[in-house]
Image (tube, rainbow, N blue to C red):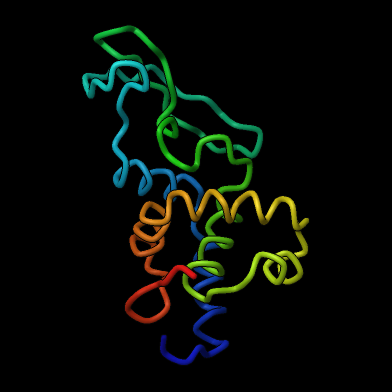
Length: 147
């Protein structure tokens, strides 16, 4: 790994935090296109949206084959997250900088249990988060790595 300069890290973190969650969700949908969680079909109909508590609008779909309704976050590691940007900050600090969860918790001011839960999700879906960070243009150097 090349040497880490503070300015590069701050620029990457600012880019993550300045990116609207709608754009993050759009890029996540491009990485993992929506498909029915029951039958796996990609024959879907858009049926409006859901506005989450933080104001994020998430597209809803209905499967033409089985009739199941679901959101565009279904089937992605972002499903169920309240703060998508914070999950990306944790993914960046963990994957690209190799920071330990305890240090991430101290730096961000969030609880250790929250950070460790997100780190487990990042480890489990490493390629998804890596691809999402690359699509947002916030990787450090050419590659992120996993400890």
